[in-house]
Length: 179
Image 1: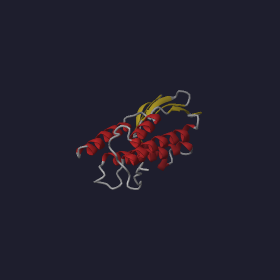
Image 2 (image 1 turned 60 degrees about the horizontal axis):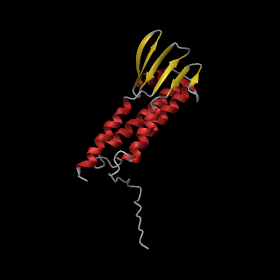
Image 3 (image 1 turned 180 degrees about the vertical axis):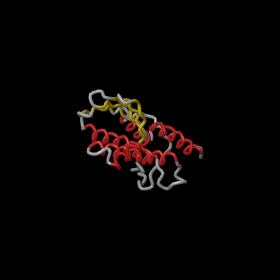
Image 4 (image 1 turned 120 degrees about the vertical axis):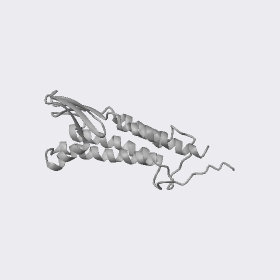
């Protein structure tokens, strides 16, 4: 394997990881069809009887801090932000070669990407309940399986099986079959 192969692998995986910010994580309906929207990791687009809006994650957090959003609805932006931070951590861990950062690892990056999908799912459960349906509306977590599968592909090394990467904390197991 050439010395450029691990670095090229990192850039390919980083490009794929960037796509997780383009995946719509959920599609939702507000109330009894008062409005509908699509939620991405960084923002949501919703169309209601009052018009169409783009609401960023920062605006949602501002609503929580100001007390505009309270109760169960206030938990959603908090879990969503945690999912976003986990996804960004996974992206950084995958994008930067290990010679730049000591904690850089594709396995850790995959775990962070899977964690972001799970945190987005917890955010939807906090808002709509375990059935993703309540009096406030319903949501369909369309992008969560995509994030979990993408994180697993990065973690497992299926995309680049010849890389031979190991974590520093995991000792290599030798298989000596001489008897």
